[in-house]
Length: 192
Figure: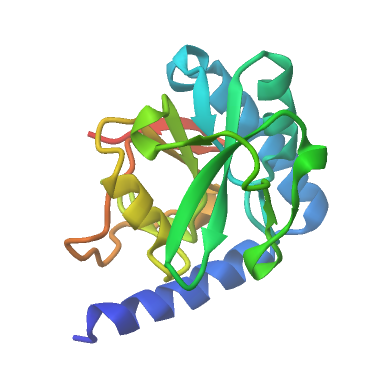
């Protein structure tokens, strides 16, 4: 049996290849379905302070969702990545125009904006590479979100993914924190 790190690398490569192969128009259409399922959920409707992610490359697209949340008057936060410190800090935005390319080329908020601690959020919306239905999440390998989630144990964690990102069982280590729900184009799946 391969060590966890190698198993994860193999799975990461496999699922990124699958996700990257979805044609852009289909990815946009599926993303809209996923966004609608999330917006209809209690998680989203009851939350005021929400951490979103700025979609990048072939991830479920979030810009339309962020715009909708801003229009609805929700408090929208996005992460800013500090690579050398291996951490994310969360800053409020009032418009997508406030974002600029940061770490890895991902759009990020300014650190001049109001900051929130993870435990002060009502909902955390997560990206990821692969997921299983027991709440396992395979990220990109930096551990940024695992460290963030550890600081918000009672905040609901909902991941957005395409059905092709699901697998039966992911190899998880003790520091890998689980999600509470997963939203795909087929709807919301609660993790129990």
